[in-house]
Length: 557
Ligand code: NOJ
Image (cartoon, rainbow, N blue to C red; front, side, top):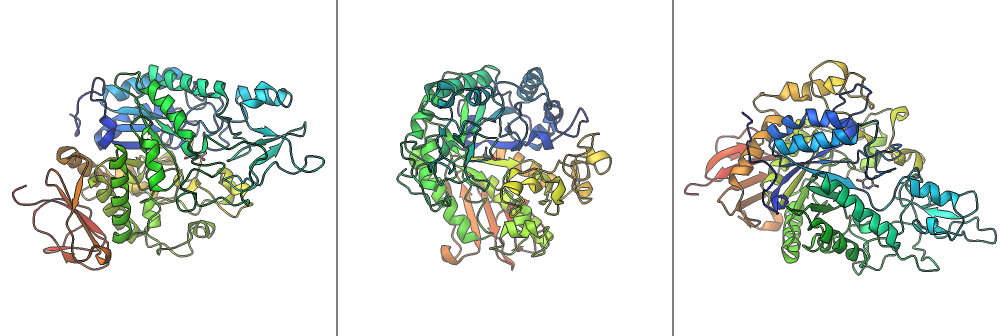
């Protein structure tokens, strides 16, 4: 009997996603069933019962489409197929069917800002002359200077270096990420139509929702002359103009694209969900989540916040009110495949430069892993107590740290090369998951792991934590079970301890009476009255220790 039984996904309510817990699988690092050293779709299918038992509602798979893996699969050769290294379309169908049997929904990634340079369209564009319809699906321009040898604008790649690469006939093409990821031209009707086709393709195969990569980047001001912006990316969450005037990001025209998508997604029963990846300020982000657009947008504010009650409180309030104004559902994220895992972030002094820390191999400053784990568990319980939808990243339920000491010769993230080795990139959170205490790649697969796992992964494996009282895995299982039982409407009420701006405690109550209290300070505080339902760490005699969250049911609730 599964520990978290629930009805099958089909026929269930249209807004299942509003308060869902979604588990992100990074397929090549999850489970390698065919032993080639790379995770695969059948590996995901095999582990779906684990996810069901964990108690999540849905699984989101990062791209598993044909790809040279120049950017971990976010360089897509064909949006409507499966990478032969990861399986076949039949394997994807089996995975979707099995998930549904287990009552889990499936969300897939859609990457509309760019294709890979191996996509049929890009090959065609390279073979076609300047000014041709094939080139118009991308952003090709002549260069500056008498011989066109300078890039058409000063736009920079997110991964470092210029955002333009020159092709043999002298033109340049735009890529906001790696050179293997040419940007599409969303003013081209064929591009628009093709993505509607992709949404239908996966919806017809039964997927329940989509995660939309770089949603804020699709509409660009490509009017001539291209507008230089000083060669420096504004910090998207704090420095992008709030009026949609940046030439590349968060332009108002982008919303028209998603209104078109919503019509397609609403053509299904139940309507397919969607969540935008849009690194913009809260007030702008929620526009992508309007009901006639995608419905949700990732809120990354907690992911970039230090361990601070004040900061968490500000971000939670801002996200909830912005979501409510738009009729959207709030979302919460602490970790994903692009950032240092939250256990490690919280193990470091506030303000640590994470790039410099990774460059030092994770030694400067030395992380306090115990504090990191305590805070990570407390933060995850707080996250799961919030109204709205929570996105978990594979391995956080095991309390995995960032693998910060990966040697340079194994790094695969394009950021490493493109920044001239100034930034190590994101491989440290993508190391394959440990399933067993011992054995080849700790149960990831018989073919070894594509990134080396540290010895500490054995004791952090699912096997080592399964059934172990107090383990992080059991904490997540218990929290997800309780969350399901206690879930209320999409509001919360704060119970203030002292002046909110100076308090170190966040105490909230949900509409069902369920309370969550987090002590962000380094000293004990009084434990509020009520029946203790779950705690992220040991409690004192009537006290809530430092870096701990407790869930309570007050008397009479
Ligand atoms: C966001 C994805 O999460 C990241 O992994 C990827 O590198 C970029 N978009 C480009 O697709």
